Image 1 (spheres, rainbow, N blue to C red):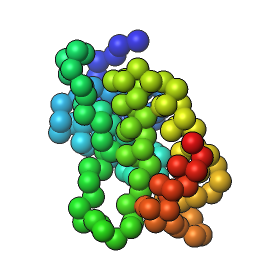
Image 2: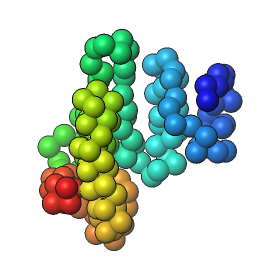
Image 3: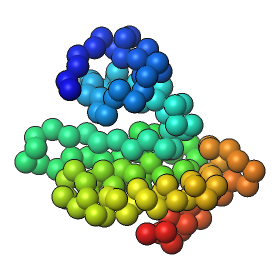
Image 4: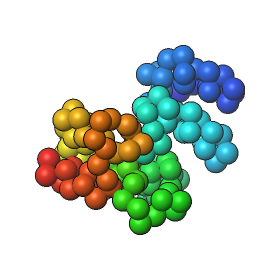
Length: 140
């Protein structure tokens, strides 16, 4: 069901009852603000995939909400899960491969269910970006 909201109400509703949203469509600045807010609902920006789509006949751009994290580049600290989940969105929405999307999403869920965490998610023994990617790959 389509619903239009002012951004201040959307920000409040996102905290109040986040399950009411499946997709949010906003301009860039409001999207940046709301995605940062939403990241705290799941624990980290490193968990949020995103897509920028326009003309349905053309390709979308799929990337993690946090961008490339240049401040920690080369330090094996980044959480790769948002990137992996962005690839799942690409498979599902641009490439018509829901089977591949399901496999990626299930592998990410299994890693989290198994207690694996990168530093941004906390935990007793955080692992690095490379190892998390390898753990997801093992579960596909």
